[in-house]
Image (cartoon, rainbow, N blue to C red; front, side):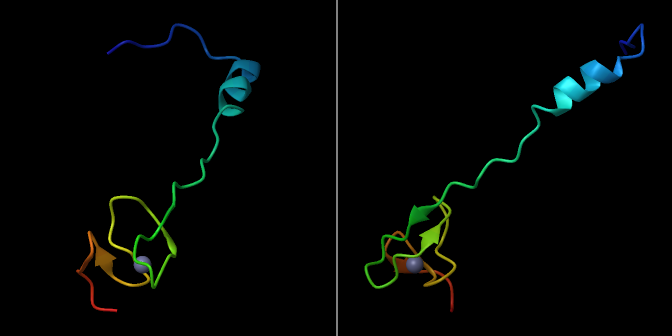
Length: 59
Ligand SMILES: [Zn+2]
């Protein structure tokens, strides 16, 4: 395994870590007309339990 030859400077470490950010999760409105809550795409809605126009979760 490759091993770094020198200790990385504190400035370099901090410059790299300054680019580490959290990203906001992608949310889309639920296609169910009666619901419309924001939910992650490609997942069953946690509010109404529907996915692809079908009830897949018991809520
Ligand atoms: Zn929903």
